[in-house]
Image 1 (cartoon, rainbow, N blue to C red):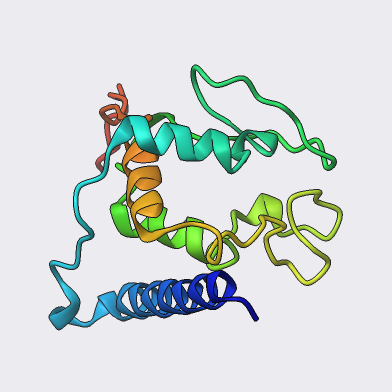
Image 2: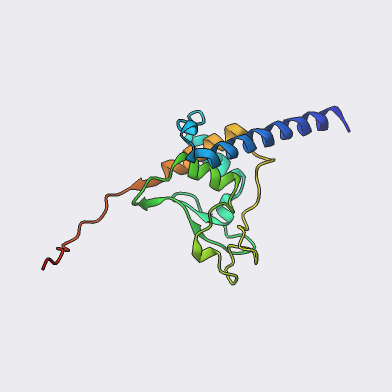
Amino acid sequence: MSGKNKTLYKLSNYLLMFILLCGGLLISSCNEQARGFALPEGDIAEGKATYQRLACNECHSISEIDWKGGSDNLNIQLGGEVALQKSYGDLVTSVINPSHKIAPRYKQKTSAEATEEGLSKMKNYNEVMTVQELVDLVAFLQSEYEVVGIPTSDYYPYHY
């Protein structure tokens, strides 16, 4: 193994350990001691570049970036108006462990978005993405969501 390959191998091992540590912290977030976990602030422009470099737009569509459509021809919408802000932890987890939380509509065995086992078909980028790229990507994704208020209702409870 050449020196360059050894360096890349070591770097990928450190990155994998860091990602596993972050995942462990996210999983243990129910524990009060895990409160306050946060990665450093990311660069939205760099995150957009990472999104494009990793070809996320083969399966995901997001504003201002053309959707390419990959071999599965998936078009999973990201961003837009939501009732609740996508948390930093939710987005990090979705990138480093996409099978952690799959929408029920994607878990169907006939769904193109999930395997027969109900796991996400999203590629694992943990060994090709640096921690800084992850931080930037999450900053970009979070910036694409717009929280809108809960719609008002004219519903009046019926009282006896």
